[in-house]
Length: 222
Image (tube, rainbow, N blue to C red; front, side, top):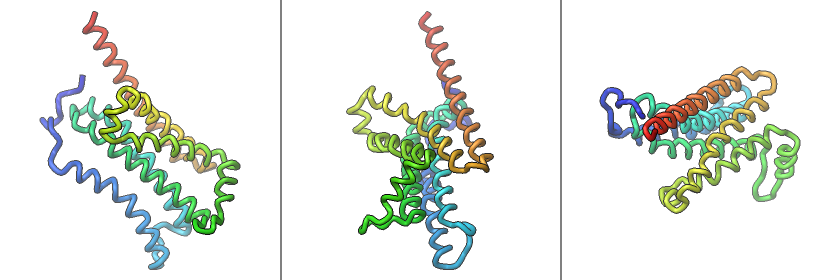
């Protein structure tokens, strides 16, 4: 059972949805804006390799949003704020958007693919084949597509139990993301290890909650 609501906040506070949306949107708009400033105004907010920094920053935010979706259940269990559940979809969609931006940055700014002449696409394919961490990252992105497409209320209603089974991919995607991050860093893996430790801590917390609920149900029906 979930705890009693902390501070008596049993219902969502006013403007929480709007605040969450703006806070989540900030890095997805702010990081490209900083890159634009570095290129056009001569600033150096993103250092000597601004495109790489943008690429890495968006990837990290994708992981943070994914972690947010996994944290919803533990936070509900801890705080009793059941209204947090409806924001899992919001965080999941922002994770997809951040991953898409991360991918587009790699393709169009890092590899400098030209859309109209198809220049550079062979390099994209070659990189995906040659570098396993890119393959893993692409697999994670592809798995996110059906989750994003089926995130609407209509899709949830039409799919029924199949929707729940499909959205179990939520557990696999951040694991793939962390592996992609760690392999991409090669030598400096301190941050990827921190992300990995946090992820497995959250997954362990969720497992403990599930076990406790199963025990409570078994006891109630005994």
